Image (tube, rainbow, N blue to C red; front, side, top):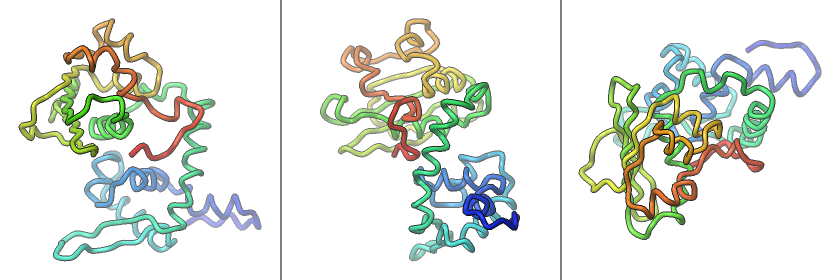
Length: 229
């Protein structure tokens, strides 16, 4: 931890939060990741040793707590009250970035798992037909596990990259690049469909109202939130 040696609350906060990858790890905890492997999956560019060091540091700073579930061989990490208090900080950072620092953002790397999780978390269940809905999303530019599934069952949303055998209601075929631009509001969903950049096969009730139930990032609105789950 770098000590700025200043009697300033901003410097004190920066000494804790501005280490490389620290904010991204906190972001993933806000999105619901609890296991080391989950965090690593959503932040593939961080090395295993650095991730372990950052988790240890966040635990020392009392921003997270490490627990071992009963009869489990792995630890899980959870935000403490001081960690959860950072939600408005991350929200405002995202809001500021979308307004003033987003140039070239959607040209950068995005993960299939993170993209699917984001879209799943933003789905408006009230705009879907009654009953269960299953969505198959195929990302053509992903070599390993290009198919992902979003299941809305009994009012809950589940994502996975394996076929659980449920009847699929909506088939979507696109690329990470296109879907990332859709997610961040650079490309309108209906325009992407009309241009063939996002191919959707579904009953008319799904296709006609896709913008109602398939929401995009809240950071594109006036009321952003850091956690979309």
